[in-house]
Length: 97
Ligand code: SF4
Ligand code: SF4
Image (cartoon, rainbow, N blue to C red; front, side, top):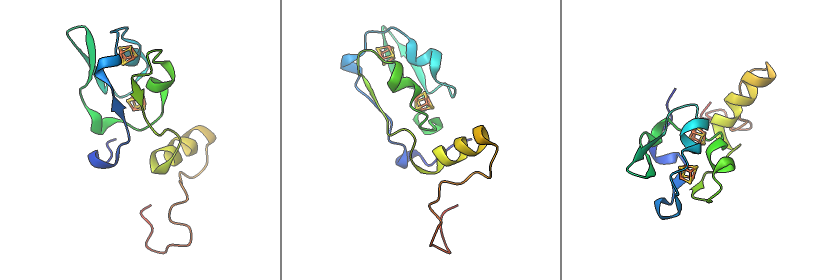
């Protein structure tokens, strides 16, 4: 599953990265790769904003607004067994979901 590239909130400050590779291990969508001794965003558009990388980066090199938007709604539905919804279409007949 991919999301629209330009709406992903994921940001990586390469200057802070110490090359520990933790983000590569925890990311379920292989968004990161190593380039030399540092991580780089290999496939930013594959990010589903789960927040695992930012939570596990001890250098604080990664920022992402986790738990918001449609991706979070889909995940909550999958985990909770309910109909996936982020609520963005509530009160909006032409909502995006
Ligand atoms: S978890 Fe943080 S410090 Fe470690 S490789 Fe990824 S960006 Fe770099
Ligand atoms: S927020 Fe989740 S999907 Fe996006 S880059 Fe981080 S670990 Fe990967």
